[in-house]
Image 1 (cartoon, one colour):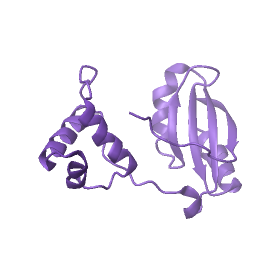
Image 2 (cartoon, one colour):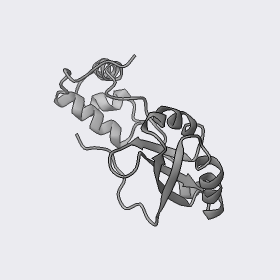
Image 3 (cartoon, rainbow, N blue to C red):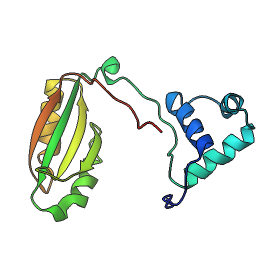
Image 4 (cartoon, one colour):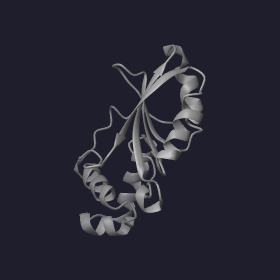
Length: 156
């Protein structure tokens, strides 16, 4: 159960812990403790508290999609037939593994998705067979990324 952390103020130690982990999520708590001159138990307690409050959610291994054969990144503006179909569309899009991000948004699109595919044939299949045929999706507009120039988390 995710708690509301709007009343929880990150102090300097929390920010330092998070900054170190954002650079390398595999660093042991004992190493963080040495760098920050505190006990390993302090790091553990702080991390547990931030997890319980929903400030952090686990850690991720980041794979370079191109190195494993996924050369096309595209952004998809999705128009829904009705706004009330949003939840159903999300549930359906969760089943398409190539959809790696999905946002409910303002502006001309109902939703905006990031999809990663092996090549243009794979992209065409995902668009034509998997996404555009979903119930509630009226149409889509595709933007192909030529290069990702910046990718980062927020800085604390």
